[in-house]
Image (cartoon, rainbow, N blue to C red; front, top):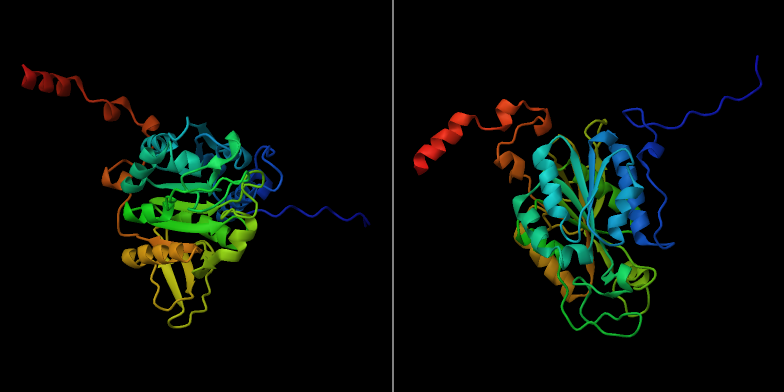
Length: 347
């Protein structure tokens, strides 16, 4: 009989992988950056959901945030697009292979300034894609200038005051028909990982606007995206938990306090409404809530709006389930007779 204790086997998820197998390269961001916390929660969400790494398509543009796709799901597919052009690349990825799970990580500059044109068309098309904005209100790679999401009256490290109104990404997304709109804070890890799991399960565009303080250029008194300001002004609108469909579900539900939102794949997002009159499926109420919060200088966190009735873009186009690369040429290329018919019409 051996007295040597056998090493404990590492914990695995439902497909037999460890959380280490959802990791990536070592981060080169500033120590304490909120982006690294978001990366950790993305890793946790994919692990908990048991997503096969080869099914993950990671997309980004330019900026501190766009480096982070190298830090999770190393065995996924990665594409680093040029500044602000990630939505078009992500759209092409999903059109070519709808079996993938696409996640784009962008920053407030990449999304709300140079990429604004592409961003709004992604939202209105309802491309099945998780779009995470790591929002710190400044351009970190170019020494901390204000971005388009910086709040009116906020202050830079050098004392400059912002005199332009901020673009509210969640308000914009709701207005343009995005079917899943949420906001969170990188310091609220429990809420963030639940929202990420719900976004993975959702079929359509899932926008997650995550306040992620920049420790180098925007974490000081006078900043409205510092850790202290964010903690002092965060107003969660629900207590959120996500129950994946592949697990037994036991829900304690009290009338008037809890709402279950059915996702397309059968999983559920469980919400506990702090306000009895709040309904996340009510577009008008969601918009009013954001306006009210902005007037009070608060930022709401939680699932702000969801619409499961609008089909995603690929369904609207009647795209096939198979990746296009696996189809024979007879299905992907019109026959010569089709070209002849067109030419005959033009003759």
